[in-house]
Length: 332
Image (cartoon, rainbow, N blue to C red; front, side, top):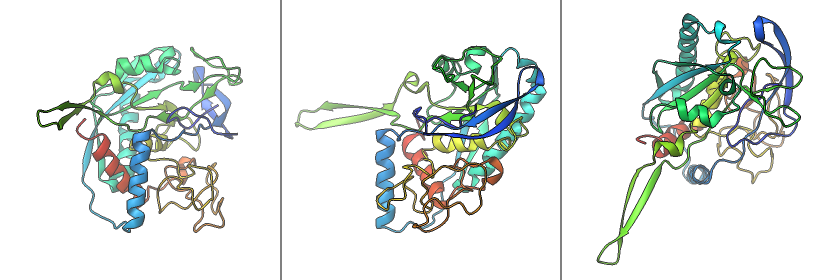
């Protein structure tokens, strides 16, 4: 099965969406269930920032503004199993990386964000390609600072099997393997503040970037078959990476809170219609909150729609990503 994402690894209720075909060992097609995982609430620092910005926007009507431009140092890491490694020739990897970079740059350009790709890495290791030892993988491969984006394109990204055991090697049995489309970390506080008392009874404080070991887990894991032209029908335009990188910039799901209640802030965006259920495919006219203005934002990158349904981020989301990066990542 396939699961869309993790932010703090919490699964949604009944997330099975559809059946797709994925190329497995030896290029043979396997039918597997496409499953997504929901995200837990953002960490305290990010949640507080969202609440502050949301309240400020309500008090002072948000007006479009010229956003600063950010060019993000970016690393792609191909991590594949031994049986999949022959598919990942240097030419194949280079072409996929270029295509994926183009998709990311097009999606985030309205927010003033672009990506500078460094030479991708290539690792053959089954237990990393399945994500069985994710922390070990990230500690070994992560590059750059806290403001640098690392995406791990894993050939067999998977979760624990239904019995609760963790799959550690490939090839997989479609009956027991839960494949994931992707997951990503959200930004948190990236500085350490130290305060010392002075002779006048006051104190002086200095902030410095946290040590790299404190953010070794930072980054996104994406099923490699979801890259442009990949083997996943309906999910092979490279937009899983766009969705996950949206989380890296602090965005929540458009259906956050799973509620139509007027006092539920949802994703803290005033220009994404309230949505009580995640989306499967591209159901035009879906409206899970008929008592609230607007139909569900199924074309928004932060819903669970198929790649062909996605068209963009809202102006509020664009500004929020810029503000989150400036406040919580830039310079660290």
